[in-house]
Length: 146
Image (cartoon, rainbow, N blue to C red; front, side, top):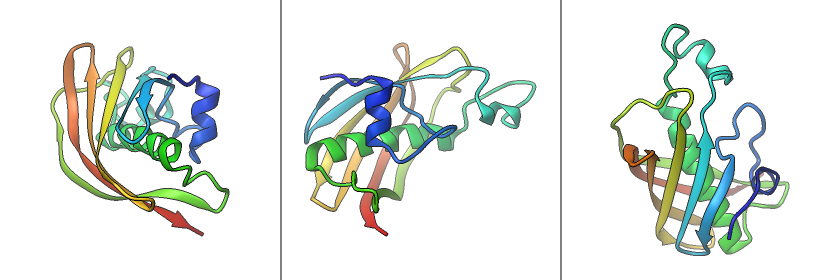
C-alpha cells in the first residue's frame, strides 16, 4: 500500500515546515513502513545549517523516522488521529549518523516495529540515500491525549 503527500498529511499533526515525509512507498500494518523524503535546497533549516554548506540536521532525520513510525502506528491501531491526541517521541536510542544528507538527496526511511501496544511503540529506523545507510537507531514513542 502507498500514500500520497495529501494522505500523509492526514496522518500527521506536523505542518510546514516540519513535514518530513513526502510519500509512503509501502507499509504492512503492525510490521513496517517505507517512506520517502526529498531533500531540497530551499528548505528553511538550511538557512542556518549551514549557509555555506547545507547539511540536513540529524534531528530532522530523527523526525523523519519518527513521523514514518507515527504513520505506521496510526494506520495499525487507529490511535493518534483524533484532534486531541498525538504521538510523543519518548526515547532516542543508539542513533548513529553515518553520512551527511545534502540537498538533492532522496532519503528512503524504513521503520520496523520491535514492540507495540495500543499506547506506545518501540521501532528501529534506517535512513538511506541510494544504497548508503546515512542514519540508524531506535525510537520509542507514546500516544498523548491533551
